[in-house]
Image 1 (cartoon, rainbow, N blue to C red):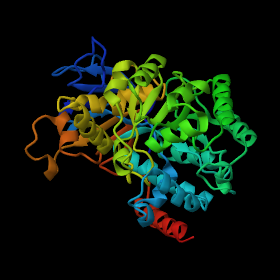
Image 2: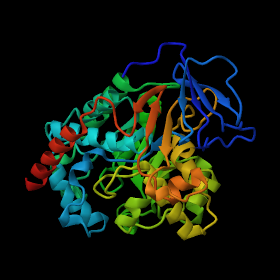
Image 3: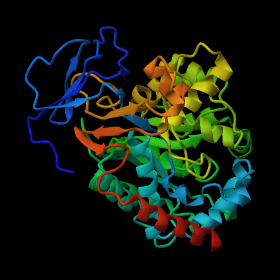
Image 4: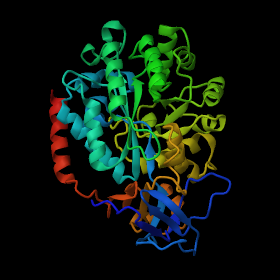
Length: 458
């Protein structure tokens, strides 16, 4: 799709409803829409108002709800190849992993490229403009897994934080993964540095960022956690890992390290605002306070947590304590989808189940936008405000499921929106009329489905 000429001003005009995610005390009225120029939001227009300067083009949003582009803070793109696989359909986390690891060990570069493209396309169609992926499976021949992901992100025109995951603790040493997907620490650190130096972008508008991401306490050594933290500080990039997802993990940490998960996190230099944690469910009151004081982020993954019966994250308390809280769809083998707007709905309902029905719809949407941006250490996305990146999602409410709805913003979650009509990233339309221009979705699905069948067949 042709990029707008420099200096072109586009008014996304008079939306049916708008959620800005702007929690500043002087947040302006945005009911008249936003003006986009050079990839950023140049102006926020009040209800009944007009832009302060002429515009070149307009988009009539009177049939759309306007939100910031959603932001996914935890995913495993490769797992789109193992959705709803019968042998793990009813398994909790540890048996689920033990049965899937040998399947994932057969991933080829083309499998990974297809899986990544499917995940990104699904996210984009669900209103997601920035995605974080945690890739930690590197079987022989897949050394350039993150390079393949960078190329896919660039093709679709999204933003991504791609984490260089790792596993060093195989079954021979008391871990869960097979030795075929375990790497040496020297290889991991060298490749991590290569990826940061080659791809990591800094500052507002960054498209690709790299983070370091040992998989979990039960699949990496203590040295891997410490050395990754030291390298991340040296390179000034972020850190990511799974933590406190299940009681089994808590028991593993007690037995192997003689401490609870947050104590272990602190012991290896990870209790910091550089880090964010996938799931973060089983924390006690003192641990919630410590995470908040440190500014350590948490990616709340409600659908996966319910699917694997892992538990309910204390998202409200964590955020109130000062920990950034965002949303993650998690891997498509435990969700089994990559749909961000539905993840916000699940977060709303699961947190209401824990804390009560007065948890606002806007708080859940805030986790999927502003909160997720904070988790990823970004202040240029996730909010509709002047100077922020023009990453927008627009939603129609003319389907049967919305008939009779009154509050347009509340209807997105309460009535179950699942697909955006328009999505803009950096001022460019990446979804138009519910489709991704230039992507042959039928051909992608056909090849991806065939690869999925081959993978599980061995």
